[in-house]
Image 1 (cartoon, rainbow, N blue to C red):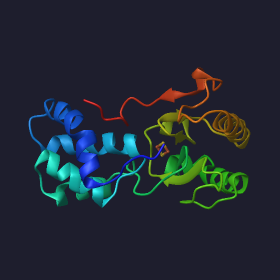
Image 2 (cartoon, helix red, strand yellow):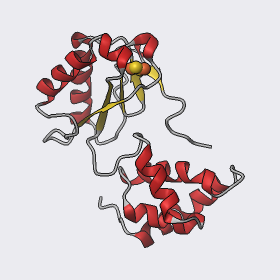
Image 3 (cartoon, rainbow, N blue to C red):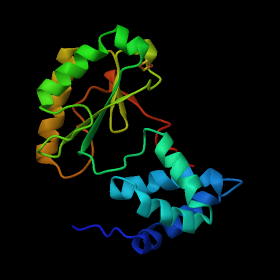
Image 4 (tube, rainbow, N blue to C red):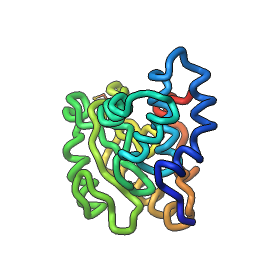
Amino acid sequence: MTVRYSKESIIADLESPIADIRKCYATQRSAIMPALYLAQEKYGFIDETAYQAISQILDVPEIWVFELASFYTLYNHKKIGKYHIQLCTNVPCMLCGAYDLMDHLQTRLGIQKGETSQDGLFTLTTVECIGSCDVAPAMMVNQTYHPNLSKERVDELLDQLTKAGAESSTIEEPSAIEESSVRKSSSIGIKP
Ligand code: FES
């Protein structure tokens, strides 16, 4: 299915849900981040077209939208793979082997940091701390935390995701991943 993507179509798609989000906040400006996230959830990424649409819907300057969208790493500015791997390489994770894991991920996936695998399944990026320093090294895949990583654990996870990605057209992660080793994100959605 082709998803429409123009300023007018984004406004048509998101005006109503963003109006609902707006009611949860004291000011228009406070609703920008959840509005951006909503657009990203629908289209997979956000760019100037989305900034313009959100600026118009919320009646705020476009620069306010751009400032927030360009600051936070949770926003994607180009199409990414079905599974977005965000490996933390900040100091605690680095000391626990994050760079070895990055080398391993790059070799396993055949891509470099910032790239998407040819099959469109995986995008690999790094982030500065995901709040899991006590269980370092850690990474996120989409909105799921994966703590206490090792090369073996990464291999196990990649195998599961590859299998699930080949079998499913949805963006869900496989249920086979052990809940006990997964910390679900409660904040990244920034939903009101
Ligand atoms: S430094 Fe890696 S989660 Fe905080």
